[in-house]
Length: 421
Image (cartoon, rainbow, N blue to C red; front, side, top):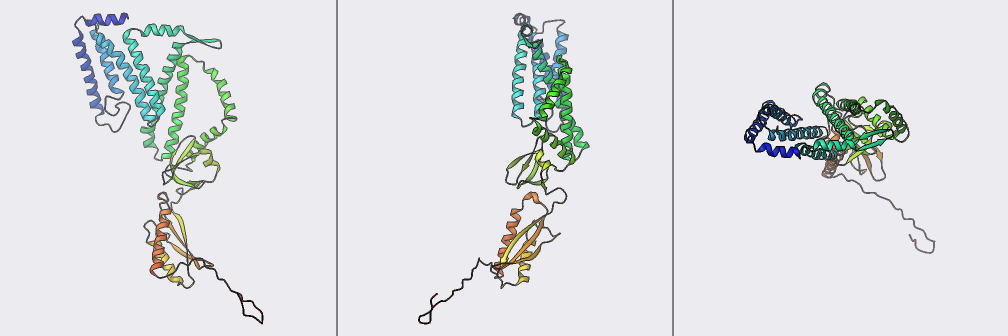
């Protein structure tokens, strides 16, 4: 509590208005620089956020200006207000860094929001301990609490500092990978699937490098990871082989471009549009809003119908039966006009009509036609054509026969009596 008593004593010396003015000037200058630099920005960013002050640049500039003024004024007078502002701005800068990077990399992740809130509580608690002068004794007590891992003894302070340094490295790695994906890959790679696989590969490599750097900074001997690598290989060979196969299949799909985001595919009679290709699974969304999560291994080892791979044109058919008394040429004309009158039926290749069977109830015709936008569904086109066929046949007076059966009555009887049936 010596720091708190010192703060109260310094407040009585009358220099507080100058400090508040210095702090306000530092904040205004920081905001002015952010406004000049980021006034033409578009969208959300780590440096400027959504409203300039909720990005990383504002607390960093304010921290630098405030700390500089604290050192300059501290030579001539006590600066208790500025000493309080410095840890607050440090905590705010850390929170803004984590929040903006997580928002950029994981925009819809509830776990990322939870980690952000937990870090905010820890950062504000550390700032409060710093202001009250309790942070050094708390760190000293944490240094006395040790945990034994075999022959090694690690203090609670070392674990906490290692977790914070590892977390900082991971956040910076995620930021760099997201910046490369948005700024470099977006201009260099036009194909969305290749951009996806390149972004995943860059993020994986940077995360591994950052993880190794973080372990080295904590003091972990990296040669011990060879044992972990061997155990991981055994685990992948037995228990995790399906998971590993899905991950490898995801990279193969993205590299070979056999499936691309936006393609219309049919998997196990489930037809839809590929909305996302992740490292373990692929998301397919049907026209009715349902989503299917398909493991990537299934897309590699089984037959998948890709309706958009080479030619988007899709052949559709509909069957109709008419009575034997109907004029065949007139029926063909009505069916062709019905197909050509549908909005989504294309002219090249054009529709066709075939007499496919002499059925038990009538002549059976098959109308074939093509569409060029299967992603918009096929059932609605078939329904429209069927309605036009029905209207055309009714207008021409051509019957669509019901199932018919002919029953022959056989008479039997004797010479002395009447016949009975």
